[in-house]
Length: 111
Image 1 (cartoon, rainbow, N blue to C red):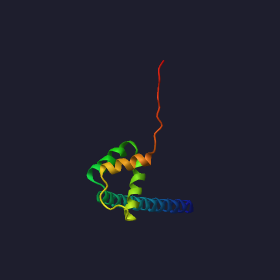
Image 2 (cartoon, rainbow, N blue to C red; image 1 turned 45 degrees about the vertical axis):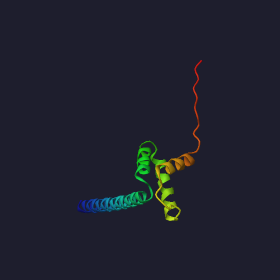
Image 3 (cartoon, helix red, strand yellow; image 1 turned 120 degrees about the horizontal axis):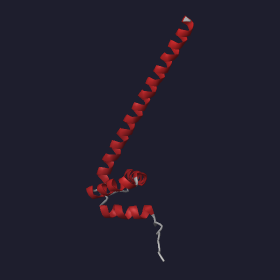
Image 4 (cartoon, helix red, strand yellow; image 1 turned 30 degrees about the vertical axis):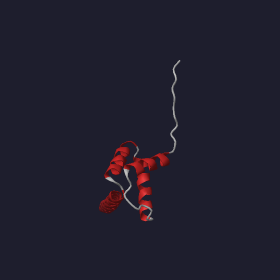
């Protein structure tokens, strides 16, 4: 029975070590994600006016994936040097219209 207990003890120790390692990896990934988010936020503050940032924040509530895509595109433009001055709310609205394309119009008629 001591051999069986020893095997169980080793297996338990191995499982605990694996769980600790996974927890550390998850924590490291979370820290990296937060750091990237902070960098993205700083870049957005540099390239957008407060009104434009506010518009994106409001839009994020309803279409978070779309806003993420727009932000990545804006950051790429800034990194390529194609953003000369801060993007205004009006410019952002035009960009959003172009990117979102034409929405399908649904008409309901009653008889």
